[in-house]
Image (cartoon, rainbow, N blue to C red; front, top):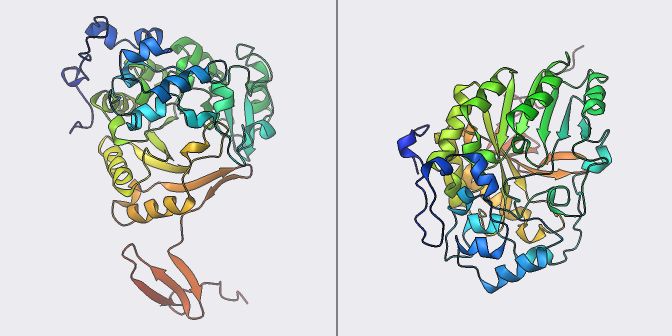
Length: 391
């Protein structure tokens, strides 16, 4: 792990030394377009990076025609070549669990399709919307909550083609002045080149009622080379712009990802993180505590800890909610307060905070509990629970 907020060129992740790979130059390794062209998309390419198990090969074969699969060389280089339980490998390589049936699984458990107003706009909350601007991702995360939209070869949330005009979407936002906050997501918005992305952002910035533009992107994790100075300079022209990313494991925090975050921050773009609780990847207190403190060290603010959705093709990653409570108990009070994310369950009625409360009402007032399990009662005469009669 790096020990500075950002990383210099000299600190950059070295080109992997694997004899199975063709020679890779530093120039190629540092070019995000090269990584996009050279993504791992089949068994032969995967074998250049990892020693595939029979189950992985079978899952890759059975996923064909159902779930898309690609891994950037950068992210592949983080995988343990010999350990199929590697947290990077589990997030990136198809597994047989994706093909199993689970009770209650849905392709859209959070209601994106229900709240969709145009081809791309999903209006679920009063003052903000999301725009699903693409199906494309650099890595098709095996736990994606929009697995149908981003990785089902025959499926999509789009009513029309992704390449259709954005005019209808922008018009809807302009005609609803209560919308002050727009989140660009997908897929991954940074899959677009800078020029196309700027067209979309400039169209939003031209709407007077839009105050905040947010981008949801996993590129800082999956391909940090994409976060160039040119991209950051473009985004900075449209402030306030925020970016939320998605680190799930400390192994993903590398000198390159730290440098990508640093470039965003130096251009005035705050970076938050949304972690998903994943069985076998980060479902223990030690891993999650390390992740949150490492995020703070590179100046990324932990934002949400999502309970894994019961999504078709994803359910094998789900833990119990009790496991989430255990992890939250291991964070609260043990690390600095702003390093503790909000534990939420995403539903068709919105994101619902589900962390256990540290208080309860008793006849005397409030019974409080701290992170050590110590309890005390605060009398209602000291901290009234109800408002005094105004008359």
